[in-house]
Image (cartoon, rainbow, N blue to C red; front, side, top):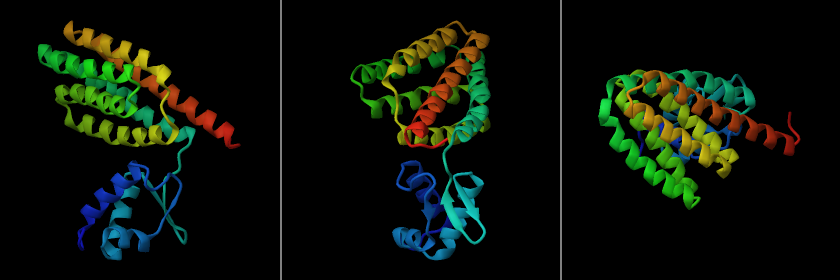
Length: 220
């Protein structure tokens, strides 16, 4: 990457963490990161400080930096942010988008259901992300959408770590179809309620998955 700059290292390291290349809870060594990205120590320190601000990294005096740990409270805390904002974005999209949102959502949903039928988890995750991005784009609230997107990036990393239960797919499909119906009917209240319930189901599933993993691993 050449000598690079702080923001470049920040983005590269952030993506590496979210892709699982640095495990949650693992130490982050400045020397190793500097070698990996071919930069000096200062850009790495700046990147770690930015990631600490994103709450992806923790920095402790005399202990250095680590990728944040994942626990039940972390997942719940993130969803405390995501659920009301997902509901808000759906409400705004139903109020503002009119028919413009229907066609792109239907197209993505058809692809999502095809991927689900083939149990193509990578495509399912990508198309699910795109489905919700369309709603965000039509909400005309980029500030709220950015907060949701950054938190959803972390939640997707948690999913990669703990896995995805294919048994959830019929429920996800049903919720997506219900959202499309609410948008078609330009019903903001229904869209908001469905989006909130949809996100709450995702939270409950992730919390249950983490709890089960902790029980198997002997953690509490």
